[in-house]
Image: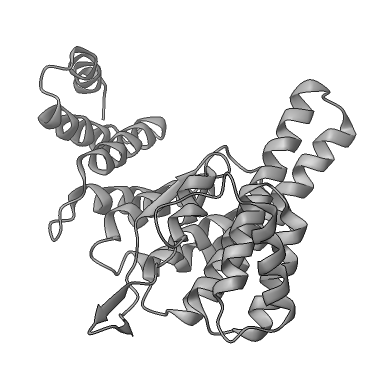
Length: 301
């Protein structure tokens, strides 16, 4: 299997959250809806993903010993709901007790395999632990750059991306409408050298109007890496020029900059001029862009 060195950015989607509405005291499950994309450079802070699912407004900082004992006893007695498993797992995760959290969540998934909360927390715990291991391996490599530390980092990155692929596919299986999951899935596949599968994922995502500009930009970058230049330029152009809906300003600018750089690098002067002119429409007072355009206008076609 061909393995590409992972870049610093690790894309993971923040999965759907369960929304509850109560009417006359009756808890009614609402449809699952997609959340925003999350670009993770490091493991998430506890408060962002452990406490986010916790009931009430408290945290897990000062849980008395008696509460651990009560919850462990409830889990051993095989409770009728998932709540004791989730509360105990969150406590362990907050305290960094990964093996205890895994033990509880493994028990929970056996009892409640269809629970979105159980699946979500278990997957997030796995991803967060894998990201933490990558970060630790990076620190070890910086402190002592040896063959062993390099191999350890590569192994941790491979395991992270294999896990990311698994989690994305599991979530897509549970929620096929969550097309946004195709984007981090593509990143995981690209790292593993499975380029055609990654391209297919991004093309599926680009069919979804809210995602199409971001997916097309990522597709262009991937196609550029494998030197499929005409296809890469086409993807960048689409990312910048979609009309319904129009791309976000930062995506439009990034796509035009990438297209201009790529066209200029391959001596496609006329195309490079056009993309720089479009950048100047965004930033008309940018002196560097004006100088760049003048050089391109002076260059032979």
